[in-house]
Length: 368
Ligand SMILES: [Fe+2]
Image (cartoon, rainbow, N blue to C red):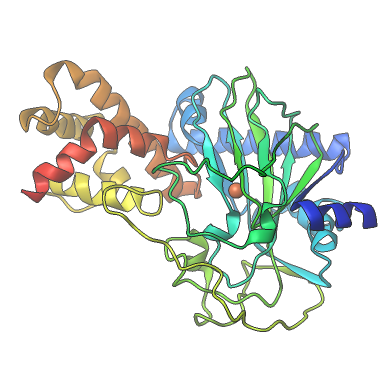
């Protein structure tokens, strides 16, 4: 980072810092992620092939120490980019994660959004986006609307609903292909998206989400966010605690006069905000048994029972047996991965597949 980069970031809402990490660090981060993925699949007793197609996000990597902690601890790695780009004396981590779009076109698009829509805090921040492989256009690189951070935050969008695609005549879309170890700094109000990975290589990216050290916790705005579970403070108070490490100095800020956005709106049906709890309730009702999604679907006998009921009730046809069983097994992997390792399918693809095939019809049948 230098003054020129910071100034560019202020104007555009994004900046690319080429080769921020050296090759050794990138290789170490990549192999740590590969080991983590292997260990998770083994602990779940799921084949690597099934696991890698399904699971695309791992959280709180810094808590494991090693290279992932270094990325944040060492100013000359990713954290300094956030702190200097925002021109803050200090910076706090909201959380970190790896998102890996698997090879083989199995992933979906992440639609246009602003990150602030999904952060339970009262101020904007930024994220650092650092791929561990080169990411070109075919690999699903980031795409931004230039300077869109200057226009405030809109209502949260639901990735499982319609995508926004209108940005006015003057909007400039910029694609950001980058080399491994480069860091893209993205303002949390910049509109961005990324396309499916159509290459033959998995596309892991380390993402750090950064907030101002004085930002206040607003769980009422984003009530579904997993970080809410780590907070023991009161709503409206400074977001601090063991899971939200801070570097540098504290500067006080005022509570903004205007709320950052109006909070998550749910439109009924399924949504990315509650997909797993909606499906847990649905499968529990179908089986008339208590339990979480993964406990209710943990064996092939249990999944067969759901499949048989789905056909008996006329929700699906007899020739859809295999398709239903396949989705139920994938639902099991998705939910069990979250329970065990806080890992998940960031695209909600399997929840959406179930909803399309059977869930929506089931919901109507169960209402009657
Ligand atoms: Fe994002």
